[in-house]
Length: 376
Image 1 (spheres, rainbow, N blue to C red):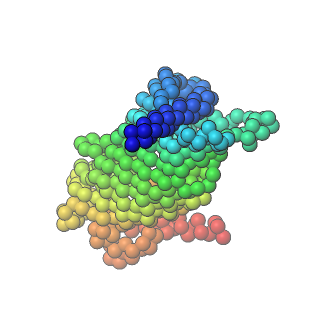
Image 2: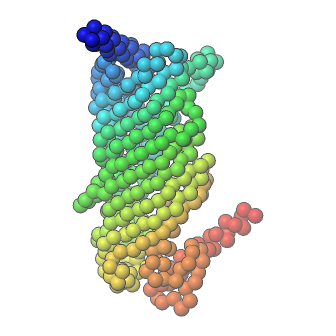
Image 3: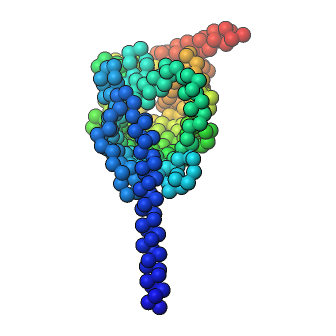
């Protein structure tokens, strides 16, 4: 019996030792690919081969032209598969990104600027020779089982809509994506995202779950936003809401589908503890004086539905305006205004306070007729 215990013990030691040796060499195998990926503007403070993974610390990216920093990461851990040594393909079990900080901004001209966007544009400008094209065809196949982000931070500055620029900050971001292949293959990669959004007085939460095809950029997701402060988005709704919103929170529940740049996003928005300052201005064409008593009768809570559909590739399609228009009409309907659908007028005997809404509906209907006539 003792002999059997000794044999089992020796086999166990050999197995564990072999596992760590193979893992060590698998990590060594992927290290050159990480180093090759370091291009202009991207710096790494430290790269170390651990027993089970490759550790890369102190990652930063600065735009070589503007010297602006777009992201930094405390550490990236890459866990390779043992079978990478036995095949021509490279399989990575997991990539873990710890405490990354990303910075994006939209310029006054409306161009989105950030690390991923700049890298893509730079790639488009590069000319590929026949030799490089041949090398790309023979490029090693990479399979990533899972990518995780832990405790991420995202800062977005919008210079187009307001001065000073709008600042939107997401923190404690946790993200997971599965089944990624390179060269890119058309497949549905499951994704999950959760995090918090900073407000003036409190934090709201964001949860997203679904799938994305990274080759075609098609996706289907469910989005839930809870207790987000309305005033966080004030610069975006200011054209439609000229009255002063004193306080309010919003929760959004939506399904978002994107295929061939066409978006289809039905959903519902709940406005909670919405309080509008008495005086001048209007909220979605409803004068503040008319709106305040209506809101009080509703307990300062409103449910507004929307269904945004359109071609994101069409320059005439404005996602922000389409969304606000739909929410505005649903908002008015929830308050008791006899509005059935967008572009349809049914305001018989409208009061003075409702004339702005009636005129807006007529304006939309006339625009719709002109657009339809041009298409013909």
